[in-house]
Image 1: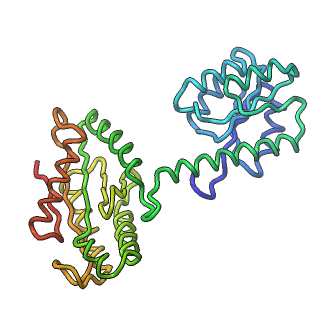
Image 2: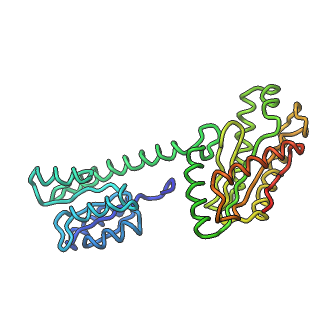
Image 3: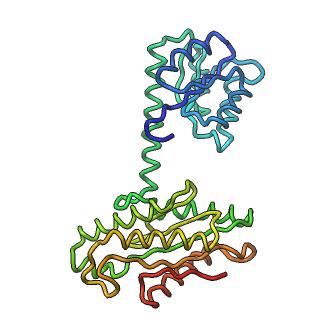
Length: 303
């Protein structure tokens, strides 16, 4: 869910009147999805990824308890918050649902004010949890993905590329003479320069699957799935040019009067034997070669 997008609530009840009443109650504030039985609930939860499910306990064929058990057993839907709606008023029934992973109970006949208050409370918890998850994956200085996030995405994309025999390109970007820059201009200026470089690199990752991350210090990493070596080098060279065009003065540089970067890259082509760590080491090795060759350049592994 992106910022400003309405949160989604799935209402699952076999009673058409209950579905209609709850749907009309929630529609002004949320995107509402309706389901009339357990099977529909499972299918629509997987397809629409709602933020919250209002789940009737007493449904034919598959009751709410079994539906919740199957939701929790599927990694795709296991995290979705569920509020049981029930005419059962025995404490042991409520306790059973909570033990299975329900977040709350709403008793039938339901009160509109109570329903809205409970839904709003649990959706606020969902928003806060997602915000924390996002912050855990973001570097505080550059606002790019952090190393932890990169490691997760890189592993997943490398496995996908290996299975599909599709290319995967990886580039390591380092600022030329960054220690000299900090020594000359001071660390606050160094932080501003790093943020500007990171912003330019991030903007250069134009496709949703591309990722720019801060790997450590002034080193950034660029991950480009389904991108061959020629395409990746074109993207990276454009980023390098845009960084130079920022014209961030670097009087202490031995390379140029403005801030520049060097890049080492590699593209996965040997799907049979190369490991993810070996590919990363190849990019790192070519970053070192870029430094040895004079910096302010892109050096890519050929083949």
